[in-house]
Image (cartoon, rainbow, N blue to C red; front, side, top):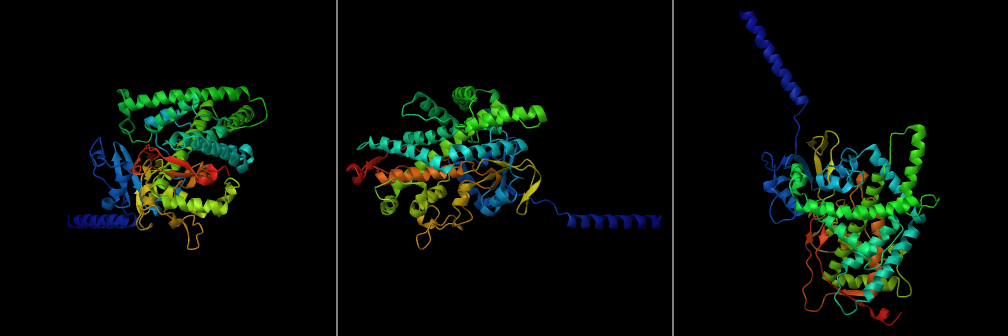
Length: 506
């Protein structure tokens, strides 16, 4: 009996030693610190209040650290507030975190992810993005044609502003029309005059989409709520119905004219790819396809994102120029010295206008057009820094936190274009690794190059001709934005006064 007990004790000691050794060899996973969570609702009670969502997530890092997690209903989310973690998600492990979540609103918007922005990472997504990138690159033989289109719209914009002398003007519709016409030229080879019913319909449906998508609404957190009446969901569906009618009209026109060999816009290019794929698939049985829905949703994606993001940056730029007239004065002086009044600004002038470029960079920093990048999803079990991230976790990169990090930016709440200039006045493209205005990696903004061209040329043309002011004695417009899929500017009015040289007919 005694020898048997001894053997059992020896086995227990060996088993305990083995477990300890295994525990040391395989440490327990370390997960990001989490906000308190309750069954069903998750952390929602800690995400309420008057504070906008990106600002709330920014403030929570003081208590939970720069990387923390929370529960939105049953959805597990990791919030990234530091550039080192952001670059790991976007660049170092870009493909691992390249997934996208399915939500009620985005599925309605994109016909269940048949676009580029909201579709999850897959071979089909890679193929579609490659085709769009190739189509945009070859359109109009490149940058020169794009510049010509943008300058055409800049001239039209300046003409419209000239007609509002000595009157307060809401510049938003004029900026929207100018940017819309650039993107329409790319997508549909068409443009609109002020007051065009189709253009007004586009503005209306786009506003409705922006106001309902990306708001972290309850129906996206609890999908079963869509069975109940929902005002926002009804608005979204009605806006998409209008959008789809316009898209279908363009689609039929383009498909009817497909017989010619010329490719005039993005829809032409995608239809041509579709036709070639159908011919090849019939012979080779290739697994990929490009359906009509893919073409329509991709064009809608490029159109919606291209209009809303760029026009929003321009509105923020005008707003900050009103608040900082000395910045506006310096830009005008730079334009006068480097370009004068004999000709209009061109893309080739960018190197000669570092202060204007620095001002644009500072606008993109202080008011990032997308304060929370579209959510990423971990496609496998992985990690961020020392923390374990489970497959299926959503990852929110808080661009606002990156751009307002006091350890990276001196007085980040101050508008200071000088932070993007060196001591000699030359432009610094990225004074901090925490500057990521268009994201990075495999899901970087597809329209980054076009947006930069538009913002530069539109602002250069406007400030060469006009001084932007508010009425004497009137308060300046608010600098607080409205959170959504983009950080919207509150409505404001401005006086665009023709400068003396232009009034005198120079």
